[in-house]
Image (cartoon, rainbow, N blue to C red; front, side):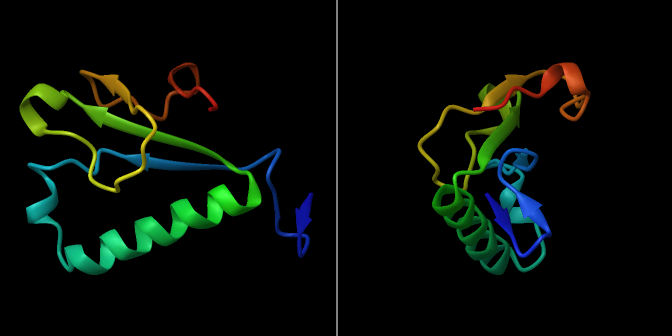
Length: 89
């Protein structure tokens, strides 16, 4: 399925990286960021796009904020975007 020639759900993925409880208060305009993240997640679900959430060291930095029910990919390093580390859901 194509969307106005710009996106295809087969070749697109929404990646949300390290939006975690202890880091979130430090984000400028965090309420707006959270609202936009929720909109992006809702859009991805509606069009059937894959969503990947990552979180770094959840024991120390807390859980992922956006409120999506899927389990984030957990990692200890900051190499989330290395191709071998991305798994489509």
